[in-house]
Image (cartoon, rainbow, N blue to C red; front, side, top):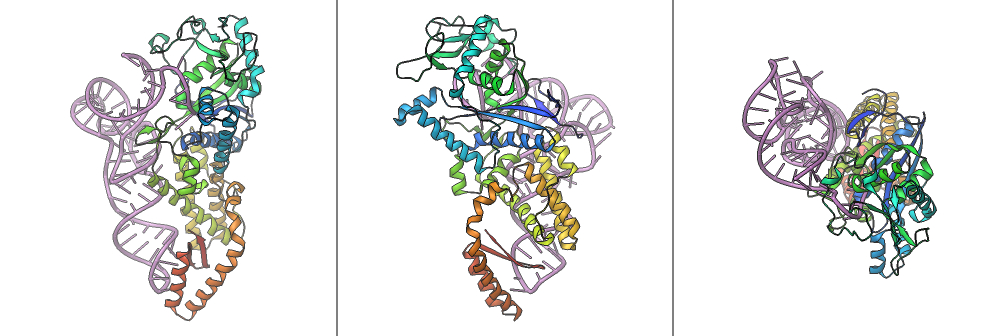
Length: 463
RNA sequence: GGUCGGAUGGCCGAGAGGCGAGGCUCAGGACUGCAAAUCCUGCCACACGGGUUCAAAUCCCGUUCCGACCUCCA
């Protein structure tokens, strides 16, 4: 692959060269969370995958505008609110915070802007007005507003389906719809539900409208990349396209969809109850940086079959790279730089071939370790910079503040105490009292501190 | 019924006509007081049956199994 970025497009099902609308700039809209429950690792995989895309675009010199929405009003939020006996807006805020926590724990960069659906009712009404004025949508008079899908020039172009092949909705309500496949832009208020006034009656947004309205507000009529999970292709993204194109917008030039995290071969789903929550994994299993490494390690279009064994194995792999960087830092006497190899770049340019990019990092680490043995400081610095720079693009730089601030609290005094024990042990080894030195090593290991003897002296790390 | 994916070594996970990705595990070696770490070597896999080709994990035909979407979904 060349030095030019190539990306897959769900609409064409082909990997081709990425050409932005405006040279040097990229606008991305990512469907973010519907804040109805705590985030599971599938949600955050999507965040991580697109964060890697964003970081690679930035590293490649693009100025990226990254919009990731929060859908803070929908049926499930209202149901949860009733169940929890809490106001719907409290439910939405609670889970929005949980998502924000999960994103930041895994070093997913905050979006350029994070618009909430409820903050864009005005823009939605404007969009609906446009669609009604040009005959694409209709308000039957009960407060609902529908898009008339039979009138569209094209529809279902992403999922490549035929309108008549779709399984008819079982509960299609034809009281107000002209066609059972017409979808709601706006839903009339029911007693007790939150509502906003519109020219067609009080109500609340349908599911798809907010993304079209917000993408237009922040990225304009046409923008470069629209992303989301595989399951959003239909109906969500099809309906976004329908609304936006009916309004005369060019909308997204490229569609990218991340695949699932699965457990036992099945999609991780809220309804099946097999979801793995981010905070549970961080409490029980691994650090944030390791979870990120794992979630980012498979290609974004491949299923990732989750298991704690695989997560642990992946973490072992990561710690090897991390420990190389630590040793390299000691030897060169400074933080390694932030470069990346040509192999890494060409892998990333090939539709973000992270697994291949990972192989190039392993190569840098191996060569770097050999350079350490050889005592070649310049080479150590070169390979350490390659590894660290590549890690940084994947959002897994161990020296990134996002991670160091999580761990550094305990160091300080501990450092001195451990040094005391190490001095005792070094003295014992000097007088060949190996029973004593091994006893120190064993005892300190029980406390979770690993001691290693190297030609450069004894080093320790927290296990 | 329609649409779309997948099946790769003990495990994870790339690749998409020839030149054995990478990692983890395991075994052996080097180094080491011993460990650990590191490096080296080894472990020749592509669901099944046909076909095309000088050459197939990769292309074609068929089969089996698994999964996703079809108006809640990352």
